[in-house]
Image 1: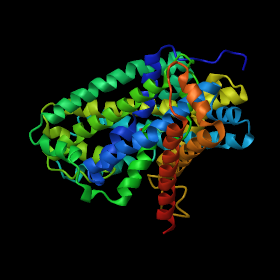
Image 2: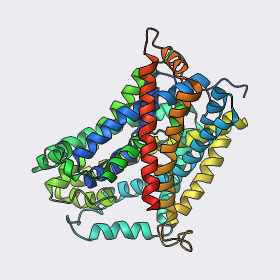
Image 3: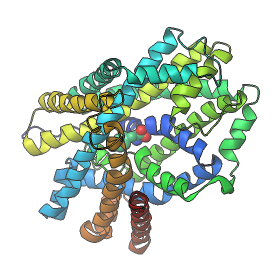
Image 4: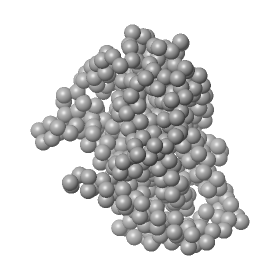
Length: 452
Ligand code: PFF
């Protein structure tokens, strides 16, 4: 505890690290398949609206709470509120981090496996619409050891980055991996839009058909706006806690949101241009990436190269997000328990890797929940964190700023790094009230859906 707290080295390093957290499987795997299922452009517009109305205020709140306290989420809520009760909001975040990483890294492992499949030419014989690709996917997931092994490799990489610390681990790798990710994505977008028949994919993504958007789509868009900017579990509180008062939170938050959204849209363009060019179904669901895309690459000249690039892109995106999730847990043990970084990272990274292995096995016939339900352990972790823990965490963060910390104090914090900044308390409060109401609505809808 006597050591000085770690800090980001540069502003761009912080922005790339936070954007690395935001840009992940949510942007390249989840967003395209959700847009595909819920009416394309109509879904996208609702999602953009949610990012601005809900995402921006809560992102600013998380950064401000972190920077003000220079602490992990548990310590941050406790210190700022002066009350032990609020530290439970921080605990909810640390618990959510633990749960999310346990299934996220399983999918991270799949991205590695698929990068190698692309490299070995395994997709070369696949035809659009054929069963072979889904058989390949099902056969991989059903194996008891292979998915666990890839997941462990993925977690190992995450642990190695975090163990090096904020500046030499997270920041250094974000500065290398994020520009690489953007370059790969630009190449894939150019490939997608130059395919014959690409226009239908662009139309699907950008021309709203409101009739295709159901209430489920609206709730999904709201929930997704949290996940995609890594809100509701203290990841951004933790990253904010490594900032100095010189940094301008508003400009940084806007940059992160713009990057996250632009990358999701670019992934959507790269994917839907190909899906429509080859007459495939955009509403394929979760299998869109791992089942439909592998059948499209062989139809494209130089397809193997693009297949490798695509799955490697997915892997990079997943890795920089997973790092931010593990950092929440590590920061908690460093700040609150006085642990050494390397010890905290290896121990809790190891525990998460073990829980993740149980999640991976649950998809291959070894589901520990089988005696009580046919829901897999993997799905349970996914649904509990994504649908409940993150929105509840975000809701409580908004309530915290409104009712405990206080809007004037929050505005004071924003002024550091932006001296002339002025904002009427009533307007800022209105943003937070709307955000809290919208999130409460998502949570209630999700609960109603389960109960009914
Ligand atoms: N934002 C990440 C994605 O879109 O994949 C997921 C995520 C990362 C959620 C970090 C929460 C978090 F704290």
